[in-house]
Image (cartoon, rainbow, N blue to C red; front, side, top):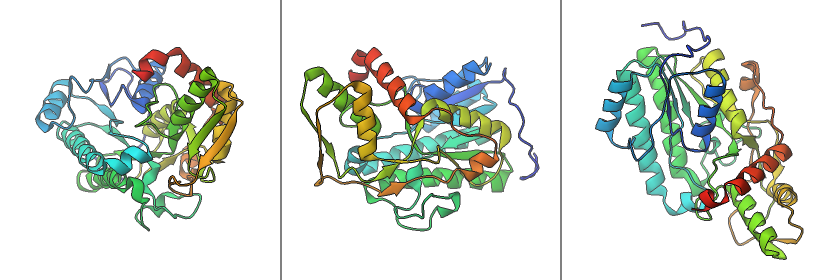
Length: 324
C-alpha cells in the first residue's frame, strides 16, 4: 500500500467499475450524466429500493459483488430548513449510517479512489466570509441544521482518518447550495431555490397577484448548478489529493431577495412579492472561498441567471413527476 502523500492524481480508468452512491438524486444523477459524457463505460448504481445503504450487511455484500475501483458517495438524506429543524434525529442517524457503511465497505474491498460529498452547512454560522476550508470546527453551527452538519463533519473526519491510518488517497468536497435538473421541488423538503421556482411557477399559472416568502430576504447565498458540481467532482478525483475538504462553489453570492427576483423573471411572474419576517432566515451569509479549487485548476461555467432559466424549463417539462 502506498504511503499517504505519495499518491499522484491521474486520469481515471474509464473502463473500471465506478459506483455512484445516490445516483438518482440531484447530485448523483448529475455525476452519472457527466461520467457518461466523459466516456466511463462501467458505471454502477443502485436505487434505494434495491440497496438500503443503512443496512450494513447489504452494503458489504454489494461491494463484495461489484468490487468498485472508484466511488463517489453522493447518497444522503437532505432537506431544507423546515425538514432539518423538524426531523434532526432522522438527518443525523440516517446519514451517519449511510456514511459509515459505505466508507467501511469501500475500505474493506480496496476502493482506490473515493470522493465524499459534504455540504457547506458544516461551517460555523458566523464563520468569516468567504469561508475557508480551515474554518471547520472553529465555531457554533447554525442550529436549524446542526444535526445534518454533524453527520457531514463526521464523514470528513472519516475520510481524514482513512488517509492517516490506511494511506488511501480518498478526498472530500464541500459544495455550496446546489440546484438544477432532478432537484426536490416538494413544499416540505425542498431547498430555497427549487421552493421559489415551484412557488412562483404556480403563482404565474394561477394568476396569483401576491407571493409571500419566508424571512427577510436579506441573507446572502451562493448557488452552483449541479452540472458544474459534477464536473468539479471528476476534476478533483483526477487532479487533487489532500486531507482537507475542498470547497466547491462559484465564489459569488446574491441575496435571497435578488434570487426571488431572478426566479420571478424566469417563470414570468409579475405580481407583488412580500416577506414574512416571523419566519427564520437561517445563516446570514454563506459564501465559500474557492481558492483551493481554483488552484486545482477548476472554476464554474454556468451563470446563475442561465442556470435558473434552464432549471425552470426542466421543472416545467417534468411537472407531473416532480410533483408526484
